[in-house]
Length: 313
Image (cartoon, rainbow, N blue to C red; front, side, top):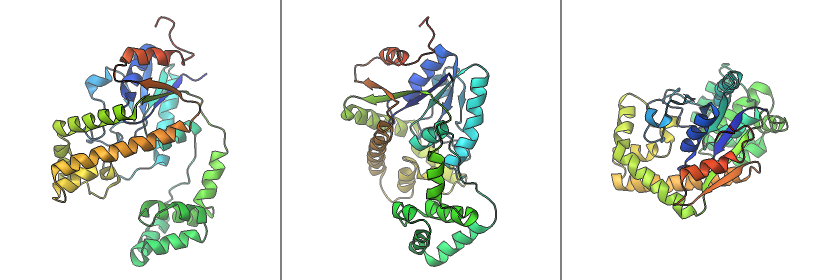
């Protein structure tokens, strides 16, 4: 049995704290599965754990990508899988923690992704999109992959062009490729632990508090520094919740107060989507919080689901 645990759930549910406590007791290391904590110098708005909060536990796949770079789930799996294997090979417990459901599921499944070749086709598609518009590109996509075209909105330029690129490079639609990979049995069989609140209002109150703490800690200054060093506001990283709203405030398109409320609302909506995503996974053992729940109670509840726990707990 692989000593592998996945700690998942909505944002602000306490995943990082539980993961660190599990690592302390199970000789483990954290493998982050958060699509925004990957980026360097984006610490406040991504709720990245501080060195003090890490308590000496090694953390991987945090602060390893430049904010100006594009990133994808395919790149994540390619980088994270060797780290996972290395942790296990050294006899450690690997604790995967994060709320980016697609990244977590793809890593556990061992899903392969169509390659990103450098043949010039992508550049040609970009030029065609500039000349003809995204509605025309969506119509082009519908000609060979109607399922993907039906899923995508004309504003989703990145995914539309990616789907076109995959077909032009491989002759196989991205929908067909995804179906093929999904039929392959999962590569890993972790213990799944999910954190959530019994009352959604308690989770939302915790989210609001976290946003206030981010603003007090200097989120605006963090965003201003990223823009000053040349990270474009169109970069994938700057579309993250908290960053796009703060870019708007710094650009005078809304007030700081309006940005704060927009961040809270967007985060609550994101948490709702995370809940929906993870609730589909029947393997998850849910650990339910209430405002009065102590962290040790959650830890002891988690222990009951881990077959390789240290009997000295």
